[in-house]
Image 1 (spheres, rainbow over the protein chains, first blue to last red):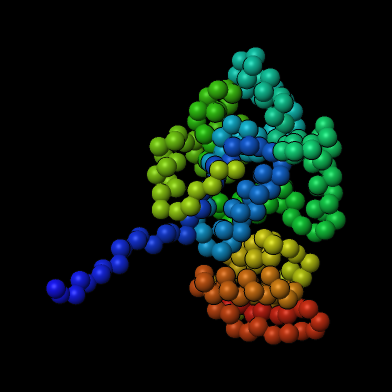
Image 2 (image 1 turned 120 degrees about the vertical axis):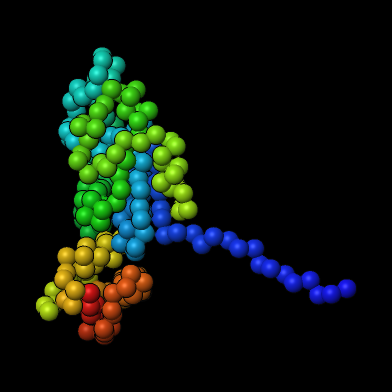
Length: 170
Length: 74
């Protein structure tokens, strides 16, 4: 019997690409999303963030509560989703007190605030996309979002874009 | 060829290498970024990630206490 030559299985090398599905819209989870996004982008990764459902709140142009959206229910949700400043913490929100406490602690300890992380993501050209389905439900349009949002996507396109890299759901 | 200074001694992860990357992206080729940083995570990550992205790390030196200086050429 001859020696069998063992050929190592050829694994395609993972690209330096990180895609994040930002679903929750919670303050603490948005901090995690943007920390990962900016950290990866600063170390040479191509980074994509796909904002869907509550995550759409993070990329709204108009800050503060306003009746943005189509239809009565759309406008109602538009009102409750008041942008970054009113994002709740995912646990122990204490009726909106916790985000204020966290922001104070972050400033005091000189850790980047959520707003600083979002600005850094824009400066590092992190690709930001909005989910078509969630936008449709809430009656939102591309013009309701910050101009850095590159495009409105569906699942199939997102899967194409995130191919070959790592994907996280936050 | 000009030198730009960046002090990240008071920053924490990820802003240490995020601010370094943003500062580097604003430089012209041949410019130098002089970064002041602290021992630990910043000292480990800033020179490493700069090299990985093709920047030239000219010097890593100790200044005083926990503060170190890194010279990066674009």
